[in-house]
Amino acid sequence: MPSSRTPRDTVASAPAYTTTERLVAEALGTFLLVFGSIGTALFAADFGASDAGTSLGVGFVGVALAFGLTLLAGIYTWGPISGGHFNPAVTVGLAASGRFAWKDAPGYIAAQLVGGAVGTTLIVLIGIFGPGTWLSDAQNAGFASNGWDELSPGGFGFGAAVIAEILFTAIFLMVILGVTHPQRGTAGFAGISIGLTLTFIHLASIPIDNTSVNPARSIATAIYGGGMALGQLWVFIVFPLVGGLLGGLIHRALFERGGVAPAPKVARVR
Image 1 (cartoon, rainbow, N blue to C red):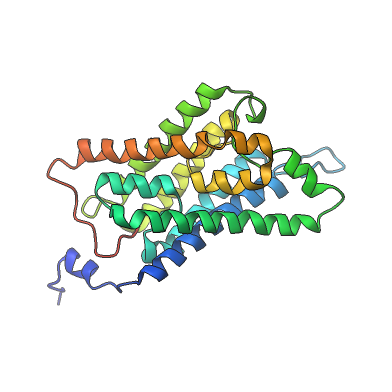
Image 2 (image 1 turned 135 degrees about the horizontal axis):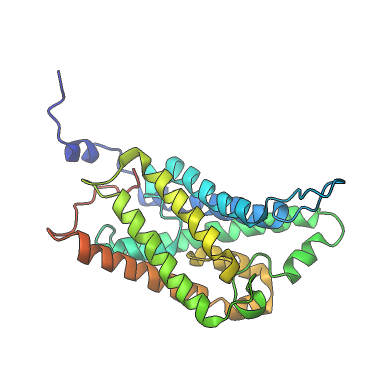
């Protein structure tokens, strides 16, 4: 006999996770995202060539896939606990859309920053035991940090970085909000859609500024990227947050005409 419970009743019966559990989940998810993707960029993107001259590195296509795959894995692993933000810009965008409480945003952002910093710190610890001057070379090259002009892989300037970060982060938020809508969302496929969106964002924008769309990722790499990376870091904090805010507000204005969709008691990516 079919259940008489409504979808909302089903969501309400989900386990109520504590604040600590949710923050730990955010830290772990951000750690996975940063460690996996930045590790790919530093260890595997340019691994040299075989004796036949075939490249052994994964290139920026492989790095883009690493960002998408690690996010996808994090969403399905810890998303049911915390919502699977793993990104301060996502937290701000969800709050602006009405899907997440502003009062909970500072704790989420702090957890994300810690998780990201742990990710790059462990990469450094591995690098200490690397061949020759691997670690110092990686740091001198910026440690996969974001940037413009000299730090841009394609030589793009300040304005390009600003526009790209606002635009791509806003797009990212609108996809997230669309596929996780309580009534219109794609339920179990949301994580795939979100992961693939982050992949295409990196495919398009790595040549511009090495792609941030995530202040936690940018801070985590700039810590070890040297003076120039730290000097340009503010752009990759401010403008992804602006893009996330705009994405949340635009989605709310265009697609929530009957009011903001009711969020489950435990915000999560389903």
